[in-house]
Length: 404
Image (cartoon, helix red, strand yellow):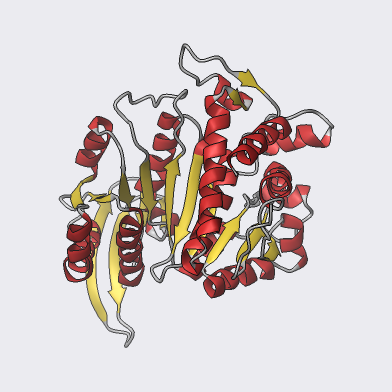
């Protein structure tokens, strides 16, 4: 059959270690035989980031802004051990953080659900998507180890040098610890727009939660900005689609989430989103079955897997050992990007191909063919067979070809 044609390239960001190996396998076996793939390619492998002094990361992010759709492989964020292992000139920043800052985007993570792996929370029937505001808060905080008695103050000086605020944080009578954190309206506004637009795009309810009863300035700012933007810009569209925007306190949200059936977006501040995304992914089964998409307020999309580079499997691969690494989230990163490219360019064939590839993945798993990480999670009564990554992808291709 003739290959499906593309109009506009999508931005392809290659990555590191085992996910880089899977990346090539997925392209060679599941995409290139069926799609006349057009991409603008960037190698975000750690060696290339070192070679370009991380310029390649910035170039890829600006390309994503230009073309509107990107697909990214998992990458290493180097620590001290990685600096030594790869002989790096410096500890390069997280590519995800750099791309997120340039696109001013919000990360949405959702699990891939299959019949044979039941969520730990028995009443969950539909995916729960976590929207994390990945800016500021404790991740950009200033900390100080207080050595002994003394007064800690919060001071603000305006751009003209005038001190406009001063308040005692605490009069320390002994040693302790001090932390300050910040956020800014422009980032919160972008977060709100991304959440509302993604809810409309996916036709899902949007929940948002903070602790404004305790944090009467910081968290309340989030709440009020969301409310204002919703009322002025999105309420009519939400009502037209029959979806709901719902605000509640974070502790109430946790209780509601556990009792719910799923099927909505849960927007969280930075720390809450970090913790809750891991909780949701684990409760649904596996981080290897967790999708991730970065959405900017002006409608740019970057798809990737939620997990890392699977270092342990990569070292085994380098020794020539067989690995059974789960490629599902990476495949769904490709299908998400291809579908969005098809939607934006009006290419129904490309959208349909993405749908069929995802269905082929689910069919493969439902038939009992899966990677080792899922075998131990399967509910009683299902017969399963653990296979290596190559055989798993080959089985997906067989099911895909049968559907085309």
